[in-house]
Amino acid sequence: MTINNGPDIESVKNFLLKLQDEICHTLELMDGKKQFKQDNWQREEGGGGRTRVLTNGHVIEQGGVNFSHVFGTQLPASATAARPELIGRSFQAMGVSLVIHPKNPYVPTSHANVRFFLAEKEGEDPVWWFGGGFDLTPFYPFMEDVQHWHTVAKQACLPFGEDKYEKYKTWCDDYFYLKHRNETRGVGGLFFDDLNELGFERSFEFMQAVGNGYLDAYVPIVERRKDQAFSERERQFQLYRRGRYVEFNLVYDRGTLFGLQTGGRTESILMSMPPLARWEYNFQAKSNTPEARLTEEFLKPRDWLGELEKGK
Image 1: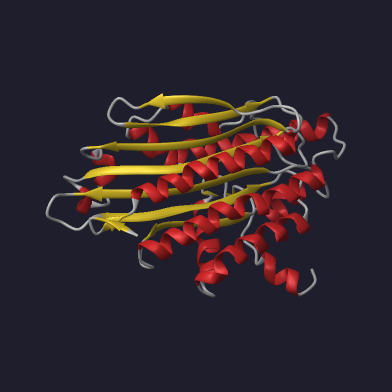
Image 2: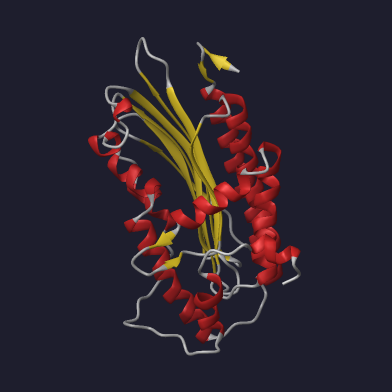
C-alpha cells in the first residue's frame, strides 16, 4: 500500500473524508433537530478543508467536525525547533478533529482527533507519523459512563498489543492535564502521537480503529443522559467548567497551536471552543455536593477498568 515507496496518502485521505461523513450523519440522527452546515475553505499557502458545525440542536448546543489537508514547502521554525530533521522538508498534514458541546450538563463534552503527517525531501526517506485519540470531559460524571468509554478505548487497542491501551491511556492523562489547575481536563481516554514503529499499514489500521471507536464510545453515553432533567444550578456549573476547556485549548493544545502557526483557517481551528463559558473568581464547590465530587473523584488519573473488574 505505497506510492513511490512512500505512504499511501490517498488512502488516508479517503478514510478521513468518509469518517467525517459517518460521524456527522450519526450525530445528526442522535440530535434529531439540526444538521451540520459545511464551509469549504482554501489555505493560501496550500491545501484546505471542510468545516462542519451544528448549532442550537436538541442535544448538541454546538459541535464541529472538521477535515483539513494542508501542505507547504516548509514548516515554521516553531514547528521544527524540536524536530530538526524536518528542516528543509515540504510537508502535508491531514486529519479529522471534532469537539461536541452538548446542552444538557449531564451529557459530557467529547473530543476526538485522528491525523497523519508527512514531510519529504528529495533524495531522502520520507518522515511520517500518525496521531490522535479521543477523550471525555464530563461535568456531572457517572462511573458507568466513564468505564464504558474506557472499555471501548481498550477494545480498539487490543488487536495491536496488550500494552497499547495502558500506554495511550497514560499518555492521554498526561497530555490533557492543566498544570496551572493541578487537574486533568476530564476522565481521559486515548492519546497517541508520532506513531510509525508499526510500519505504515499497521499504523494506519490503528488510527482507523481509534477513529471508528469514537461513536461506539460516545453515542451510548449521550443516549443515556440527554433527557435527564437539570436546573439553572447545573447549567451554571457546566458553563464554569467549560472555562477549563478553553484554558487548555488556548494554552496547551498542540493541534490548535500547529494550526495557527501554519496559517490554518482560524474559524475552523477555534470551532473547538464552547459557544458559552464563564469564569468565577476563586470558585470553591461546597463539600459533599456533585460539583465537589467532580474534582475530588474524577479529575485525576484512575484505573477505571481495574475498578470495573473489582466491582467498584
